[in-house]
Image (cartoon, rainbow, N blue to C red; front, side):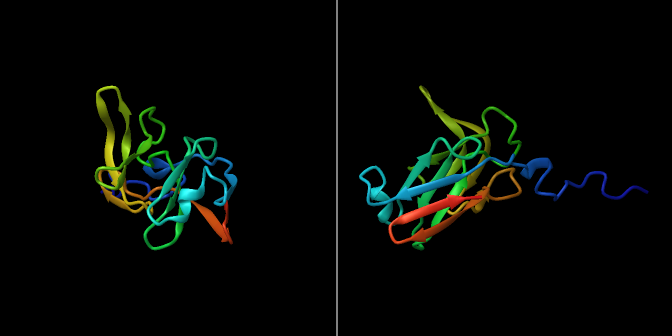
Length: 141
């Protein structure tokens, strides 16, 4: 009798929750006009040059900053495995916008703090450290 042959690997470095390591080292000065909105709860920006496919920097409603990888952890090697903002439902979801509207990839949806809400993914979004000193944010892994 073979047990575990249909079980999924719970190792976060393999299987369906694997996100390749990428260097994240950003300093955000919220006094600068391009980042000034981050001082308000519920605001977010995308840091395109960080992470694997970019990083969302979110000032969540609990007054905590979250830096979240834009690569969906469910089958992250797929070209469509981008996490995008669904401003209509105030969520992050796997897929991309095109000329015809939103094109879903796996259907996973996440809260602004990276917590998994629904979909085939078994884990939340990969988070990076955010340290705040005054109006400066230091984001790294």
